[in-house]
Amino acid sequence: MENYVLMALAATLFTWFVTALGAATVVFFKTPNPKILNIMLGFAAGVMIAASFWSLLQPAIEKAEEVSKIPPYFVATLGFLCGAMFIWGSDRAVTFARKRANHFDNETKKFNRILMLVLSITLHNIPEGLAVGVAFGALKNGYSKEALLGAVLIAFGIGLQNFPEGAAVSLPLRREGVSAKKSFFLGQASGMVEPISGVLGAVLVVFVEPILPYALSFAAGAMVLVAVHELIPECQRNEKENSYFSTMGIVSGFALMMLLDVMLG
Image 1: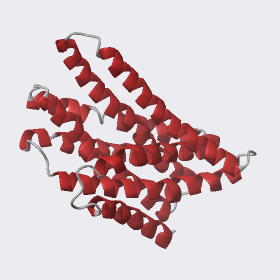
Image 2 (image 1 turned 180 degrees about the vertical axis):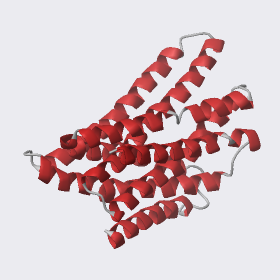
Image 3 (image 1 turned 135 degrees about the vertical axis):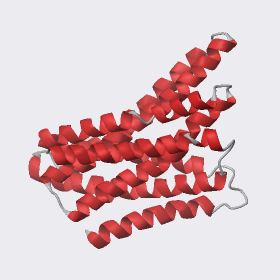
Image 4 (image 1 turned 60 degrees about the horizontal axis):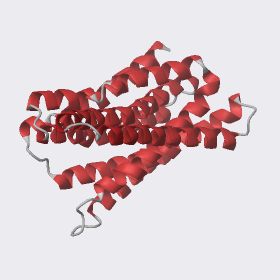
């Protein structure tokens, strides 16, 4: 049990580290190359969408057949929708708080914008950390090299999209007049929740096996919503001249994840 939790911790420490690398761009670059960020976001979206089925939903359905008396399709659908609704609810809460913040004076508004920016990215990192933790914790109930590879690829995909997320916090903060050091600190801090939620996810599925199908499908729903609602639209921004540049990143990420999962599965 301890090995799988430690693996989840190591994987989410990696995703946190990549967030810190993204945040560090505020020290070295005024603005990172948008094309590179766009293709990274697209590739990460493709990996996350593919991983949501082959590494999360499919195992969730198979596990539900073993441990649950409820029809597997219902378990997977319920968990998937709950994961998506969690992200949607988090977004709505942050949006509501931002609207309330606009009623204050300029200095307070500036502080609130900073707070809401960090909070919004932090909230999105919670289910991402859970997704990694659940994937590694699930290895206890069905270890294989293919399952391990799937968990590693989930961590890789989430880590990849964390790089632009770290930059998305630190660079706007710098434009708000925050020092480069503080912008970096707040940018990387938004990823601190991933190791915590990753370990929590791994511990839960290790100790409470019946929740594993729900946890896997919950993580899938959260990942799909983040990929479709945020990563894909973001990677398509300012792509009028090269409209397929980021799209090929999405296709490449999906194809790579599908190839590895199906070929080795």
